[in-house]
Every structure is written in C-alpha cells, then in structure tokens.
Image (cartoon, rainbow, N blue to C red; front, side, top):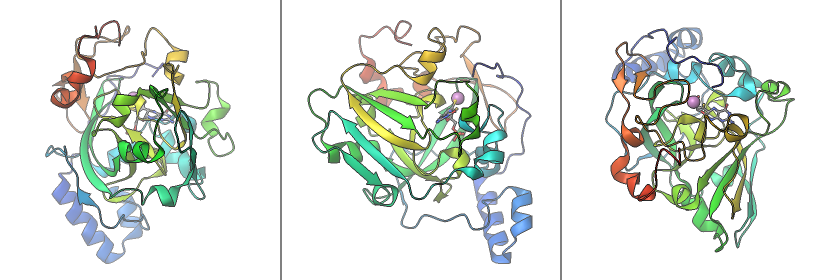
Length: 310
Ligand SMILES: Nc1nc2c(c(=O)[nH]1)N[C@H]1C(S)=C(S)[C@@H](COP(=O)(O)O)O[C@H]1N2
Ligand SMILES: [Mo]
C-alpha cells in the first residue's frame, strides 16, 4: 500500500457465478486437474466445507470470479506483488494451527483451529471488500460472526479494544525477510466493532477451505473498513484497554488511521477514495459510505468526526 497502484488493474475476465459453478461441476465430474487449473477453478483437492448455511446480511451482487479472488491478493508476508501470495503461499503450514486468546478475558486459552471451526455454525456471507488502493471485489466468504468466539472467552470490563496478530515466521513467510512492515502484522478493532454481527471470522470462500493466499486457516473480514483491517492467518487475539497501534499505523501514521472506515469523503493523502474499480469491470463505481454498510454500522460512530478519526 506504500506502493501506489490504484489504476493499473487489467480488466479481467468476468465469469458470472452460475456459469462459474456449472463449469466447476463439469470439471469436477471430469476430474479435470490441468483443465481446472487452466480455467482458474478451485484447485483439485481443495476441500469443500460441509454444512454451510446462508448467512445474514449477504449480498446478491455478482461475485468476483474465484480466479481473481485467489490470484490478485495483498498478503505482504509473501511479497508485495499482487501475484506473489498465490505464487508463494504454498510454504504456509496450516496444520497444526492454534489461536491464542489473551488479555482482558475471563477465559483466556489456546484454541486449536479444528475446535475453532466447530465453535459456531458456518455461514456463507457474500460481502463487498474495498481495498484502500482503490479496487474492490465481492467475495462469498465462509465463516461465522467473531462475536461467537468473543462471547465464549468473556471479555472483562477492561477490554475496550481487540488486537489481531498474524503468524510471524519468516521460514514459512518469505516476505517477512523484507522489512516492509514491522512484523508481525497487527490489526485492531474497538470491542463494539469486533462484536458487530457483520464482523466475520472467515475460514473459507466459495464454499471451500480458505486458500493460503487469502489468509488460511483463519482471518478476519470487516466489510465496512478498508481491506487491510481484515488480518490474515491469525494466531493471536488479545483484548486490551488501550487503542492498539496497528502495523499500518506504525508504518505510515498520516496515511492509515486506526478506524479506516471506507469513506468516499475522506481521501488518502496521496489519492482520492471517491471511486473504485470493481475487479472484472472497466468503468469505475462510486465508493459507498461504509462500503454500503452504513445502515448497519453508522451508529457505531455517532458524534465522531470521521475526518479526525480516519
Ligand atoms: N497478515 C496480513 N493480512 C492482510 C494483508 C497483509 O498484507 N498481511 N493485506 C490486507 C489487505 S491490504 C487487503 S486488501 C486484504 C486482501 O484480502 P484478499 O487477498 O483475501 O482479497 O487482506 C488484508 N489482510
Ligand atoms: Mo488493501
């Protein structure tokens, strides 16, 4: 994000979701490994997640093709190029995996990923995702509201914010050998934002286990905020009293604030945030306040000057 790339997206092929699914079914019936890879279908052997029900607040908008969702990524732990995560994230070991719950909670502990997967019913939630760089996607996530986990660990009265830490292991994450950010990647939310029913703990997309480049095995999805708030490959969740300093705030405090709510009226210091390019489309769209989720989240910020608290 320190690298300016808002406008250099090649218009990619649009595959309507039903055509996509049909094609995928066809290829699966063929067992078409090479063909599937060529067309950008889920990798053969990608594990589907059973028992996923349709979640609340899910969109009917056309979904960004699987290929774009899984090959055009930001995941600096694997390099700063958009194609790097898909190319290099194979070195990430997603089992065994644990998530430590720490800080101001009555029941701290370490959750195994397979326990976490069964903590609440899995839902499909189709959400808009708006990157601070000026592109957007519509992604069918699989997961459950983060508040299901938070309730289980019982935050104390001192828990006002929640920190999310990505794995720090340069052996598995070659991008961490470069000092683009002060690793590990840390993000944060106010407790009420973390408890909001829109905020997801995601473990899959397009009905399948989360690809590594998208933040396997577990990530955050906060759809009314710029994409960088949605930390990937989380190993630690810490409840704290003071507002965390996130990795992006530490790197460029004038550019990336703690809140980072999608806001077409508050520009990034180096570019406008008024419009966006939906991946797969040519004409730009107007960016919506809170990424179109204002009805659900505006009340969280009542009385706050969003230019000050950007
Ligand atoms: N750990 C970590 N999480 C991260 C990032 C990152 O570099 N490292 N990039 C963020 C940014 S800038 C965006 S836009 C989204 C992209 O998610 P996607 O690749 O699944 O679309 O992940 C966010 N989460
Ligand atoms: Mo982003």
